[in-house]
Image (tube, rainbow, N blue to C red; front, side):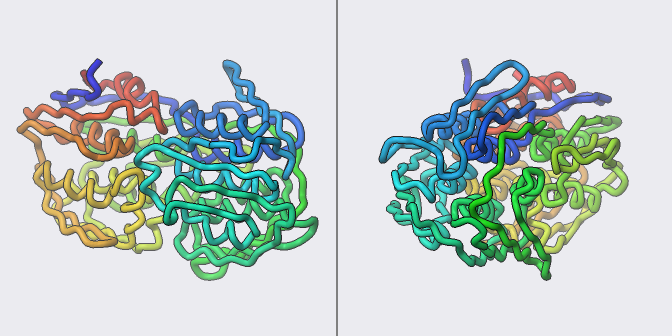
Length: 445
């Protein structure tokens, strides 16, 4: 079987209703928090992907029992500091940065050590939780802040005060979950640049004592140690990052519309909606909004955009749309002016250097770009049409680059022929991507 897809036809107008898989961030947090709950937890709609499978294997190695049935995933947790595993247990995080940075929070208060490894891509990415690991009292050994990483916990974990300045939800979440292992009623204070807040919402849903005060662009968060939560039930909503591919497919297609059912529209994850509505006013609407298990969920209605405006967004929006910027760049390609995206240096630290990869991709399809360390200027072309052979490769098997290239091929193509390599990369986060997009009407070989 070829490891690439071939696309040589633009997608025809469509009007569809689709469902997308569960949110990856929420799925992994469920797995980790269920492992340190007391008793059985159930998740309906847990994402079935390589990242989530790696998390399930990880908590199993740490002593939690996992049962996967057709409609739900069940985890029998052992409580905070109750996990049981052999010294120097090896945890393979594969390609999951979330797992790499959060799994240590389950073992900070346990004396035995774990050794984290990952695939080639993950092994090139910074660990980022070294400093808070030290503050909590864990002993660590790493390869210059990269994998492999050995974490030896301590029975004398201490509360911390820590300032997170990168806007990283993973670092913040590591601190919040680790703080639960500190002595009963001790208080850890995390001052965090605002970012995704799935962990805080889950804490509130589980009635874990947490206080949050907002000051400027930072959240001041207090968590009490020693608070044990019981097993719980959660229904995982659709993933906004996965929905984004179909949002942009529809915006870039003529005479089309789509309804994406039951998607998580958490404000800290909906930056793409804000940016897309700036570029294509009145093209996206939420319907049937509701709160489920602490998260806001809605159906997303999208219709074809009539035109595209250039934008120069505030850099503060970047943390709310960092995974979706490759798609926002595609929308910018159709403007008749120049868009300037600043404060996006974080893209260089993803599965691939997405800032550089996206800049090279846009040049390859004939778009003028100016790439700097943390910004990208894109000179759009409303008449963009690809009439040549395009080969997309050498992007570190980054799942989001593969899917972004598919959207470009289905909407920008004229008489061209696209060969997009590493189709297996989607197993990381969205294994059903090709099946769903074919149901919408895409012709992909």
